[in-house]
Image 1 (spheres, rainbow, N blue to C red):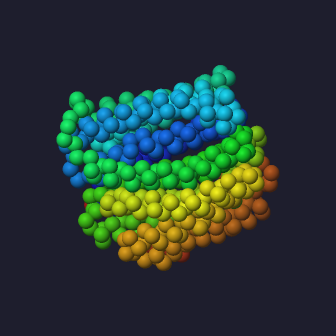
Image 2: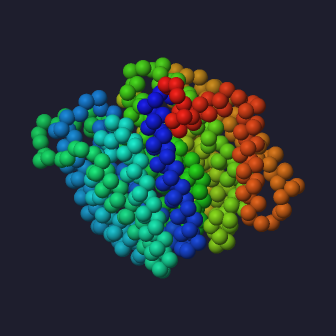
Image 3: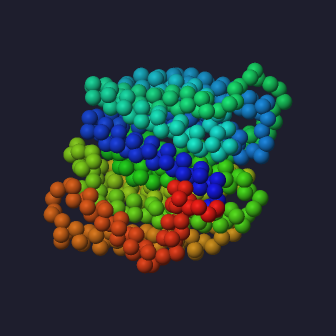
Amino acid sequence: MNGSVATGLRWTLAGDLLARGGQFLFTIALARILTPEDFGLLAVAMVLVAFLGLFQDAGFKPALVQRPELDDALTGAVFWGSMALGVMWCVVVLMVAPLWASLYGDPRLTSLLRVLAGLFVLRSLAVVPEALLVRSMAFRRLFSVQIFPSLASGVVSICLAWTGHGVWSLVAGVVTADVLRIAGLWAHVGWRPGAPKRGANWAHLLRFGGWVTLEGLLGWVISYSDQALAGRFLGARQLGFYRMGFSLSMMPVSALSQALGRVLFPAFSRRQHNPEALRISYQQCVRVLSVAVAPVGVGLAVWADPLVPLLLGDRWLETIPVLRSLALVGPLSAMVGLAPPLYRAIGRADIMPRFFMVRAAVSVPAYAYGAMQGVVFLALTHLVLVLCFVPINLYIASRVLGSSYRQILVAIGVAFGVAAASALVVAGIGSAWIPAGPAWRAVPELILFGLCYLALLGVLDRPRLLEVADIVRRIGGWASRPG
């Protein structure tokens, strides 16, 4: 991991950890004020917003990052094209809102969606400035853009929830975050749009962006169809339990995986003509990321019973079996998340859409059947699909890079195996020495679990533990030698 990547990851990871950590704390606070139905209602509305958001910029943002050279004509054309798309999708949501509310049998969705429709115009303003900052790897500037909106939106939501505004407090938080984030992006980028110009070369952007958009569309089918079907067959309340379990499984690892994705895409793009460097970087990311995420998934699965009432309160007890079923989904999905920035960097944005086509064809009918059986069965269906498709994704990545598939599987397997063994040891110690019953017993057990995991990993795979420690020093800026 060279210096620019380590520096970028330092700021991006710090921003993600603070933002996600704040979001996690705000979610816990809101869960104790609002009802599962409030969270489920927003989730139903956001399914539509997320779907149409896939076409927000037609894949132009990553195309701008990946393109070797940019000119003002092309950048300006992307800005005005994104604005036009934002206005168009805003109008579409305004028109579709009553139909969506009728589909789910809840008229409140109409007014929610009409407010959320404005997000499409707002987010179109962020396409070019964010792409320019990521392209230049200005992650220190993006750090400040990320933190304040996340914290401010949480404060707004809690204040409104406390005064009895229900689901609207969640909507207000979403809108606040977007407004402040866009203002921050424009404050940190020097480029300003001029009048639309002719002569922009759209061929590369349309071809690259088309594959990225298709990848996003299929990714939405995989990521949101379970929630859409849960809301349709089980109702907003059960969707609230499912969504909360899913969020708890993803929050601890999403900060790290998303930070890696944002930093690795421009870093990989600079090395797109050096296959050996890409292969080494990818394998190192697999080794390090698996060490970080494995204990999170195992810990959530083993300690779901005390964690849910401790964090969320007794009204969320139905989330426990959902969280236990989905606990490994977040960590395993993080391993898959390393592939898209790699494929895009080498100009092979078509690989993930082809993979997603197969997965979506299997996932949608499986989710439909699972939703009809109940929320826990749906969560188990999600887990089984992830366990089936993650090895396939890793195999494709190994073939593209010419790396050893066996080494990748062994690296991941060792991390999860050590985490499972550590959990068994600590659970046995906890049952013998820590008083049973109170939810707070999870705190000392989780601390002991983390220490046991590091100790056992140091015995079984000391080189990897040292590798992780070295990378942590580089990211933290404590290593004096260059990368």
